[in-house]
Figure (cartoon, rainbow, N blue to C red):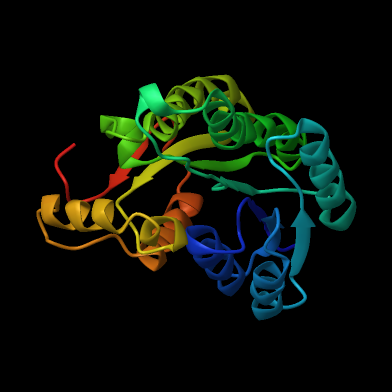
Length: 237
């Protein structure tokens, strides 16, 4: 029986590269997306018959429950959950609208919580598995003009530590990644920040989504690492 993985926010950027890497490695892949249907279909099409499209808002627990039920009905198991879906609404804290703050926390943090809560029962029945939460350098160090994003990604670290302790008895490993700045659609939307990240990098380079996806695959093969935060970055943390 082939292993099953779900990637949230899998239509573009890191989510796309991760879903494709999982498909190439023999996983059946649930490709979650919110609005980018064309891009999600392209990802699923490249994976082939082992992929299933999962439209839904991770910030809505009812929609996440429906996605989990669909996966269970289709394959009867889940071995890996990659919590990648995320947004940013950058502004200085004193200028930020409350609705923007709430939306970033709803998608980035609550979305991660919803997915873990809804998919864990299936993962337990499958005999265990891996959960990988995508955080950020901003979550480790904070970033001017990214109060909501930094707060949400920092909170994911605490969620990761707690979930790792709660789920260890079920053979479920929970880890977090803090990739460096990547030239994804989200990264390119803040060109000044991207150039600053490159200047601060010891190697003078930005992170490569394909390399991050390969590291995720490595984590999924490991049976003795949980409750860890891996900084895939060449800036000093």
